[in-house]
Amino acid sequence: MAMVQNVQLSKNFWLYDYLKSETAERNSEIKNEQFSPSEDVISNLIRVNGLLQRVRDWYGLPIRVSSGYRSPALNAAVGGAKTSQHLTGMAVDFEPLDINGREANGCDYKKIATWIFDNITFDQMIKEYGTSECPSWLHLSSVVDKNRKQGLEIGEHTGKKYIPLNFNNWIVKEPTVSGNPSVYIKILDESHTR
Image 1 (cartoon, rainbow, N blue to C red):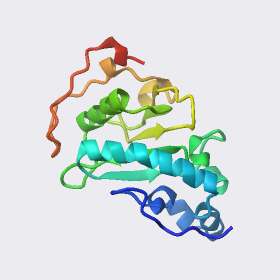
Image 2 (cartoon, rainbow, N blue to C red):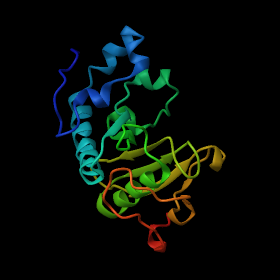
Image 3 (cartoon, rainbow, N blue to C red):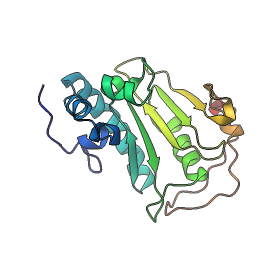
């Protein structure tokens, strides 16, 4: 299969944002497979990109894709789960950036996660690693049908086990505005407890 061309998927994201990988860049066999996704994978990436672009539009600041599609060889090389939604292009891991281009703080992550729960139909959103206050990234996925709207978290603070995401326990020490004009969101509604 031939390597795909880089095409713009939306205002802020390109196909290669979802394909790039430092691991693949270091290994030509993995790179060839990584940059030759099937039409089904590309279709799934377009759907996931639609969700991420909505998040980017609302957030108003850059978002960095840290992991999108993973070919089987790349997934094995990085120790990904054999059932990872990244293998089918149905998932994206991302990091919101602040006004200075640095990774956002816990408050921004919480605002984004809350907005996603309130405004997007998705399969999974996972607060991954980092600290209980500020994850290292958020995982967002979408399937063709029967999205579960499942919120999870995993990290040292969970014993490296997936547990339901509970917004009421996601404590942020001090709200800040990172260039985002939206007001700090306090979640008291038990309907956000997952």
